[in-house]
Amino acid sequence: MQSDAEIIQRILQGDIEAYRELIQRYQHMIYVFIYKMVNNRSDAEDLTQEVFVKAYEKLSSFRGDSQFSSWLYTLARNKTIDFLRRRKFHESDEQLAYVPSQASDESPQDSLMNKERRREIEKAFSMLSESYREVIVLRCTHEYPFEKIASLLGIAESTARVRYLRARQELAKLLTRKEGGLVHELPGI
Image 1 (cartoon, rainbow, N blue to C red):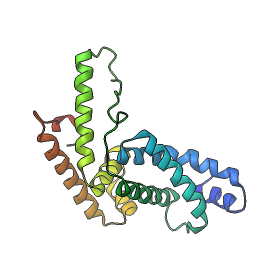
Image 2: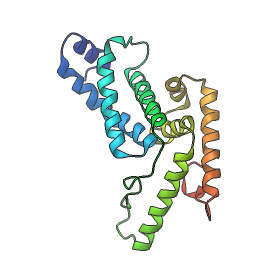
Image 3: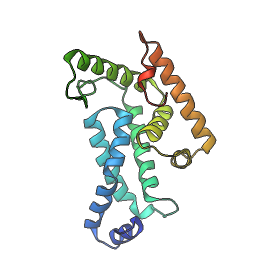
Image 4: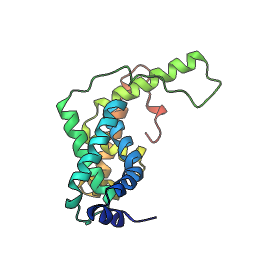
């Protein structure tokens, strides 16, 4: 398997098809990050495509000082923040779509309860600031260590830790405002 640097070198030398390898390698990671930030499949797909188009256009500016994935993530982060700033977050039918449970013997009542819990968690998550949402996504979804989160966000590791702690506290506060609270349902909170 070729390294990112080797693939980038091939692309810069005119092998346009080599870019597919980078897309295949990082598309899922970028999509998941964007989706967790915008909570809409269609928007996440569009933004992911835009990120890869922009990355291709700017590939010659990649100096190799950091990992390609970090550089690509920064492009995705900036594109997502621009998108969120341009458009207020609106709930859509897709956000509230039923996600089947892992349990095959789930009753309709349990299914409805799970759907309601998911809706409340998504609503609370959408109320967090962009900086809190991204640190939660990076830590909980991608399971990045704080050192990598700090590097990706361009902040100190201690700042990343504090931001994550405050994000968890804020999310817990938002969820406990709901009748009965949902804090106990979230891993690590």
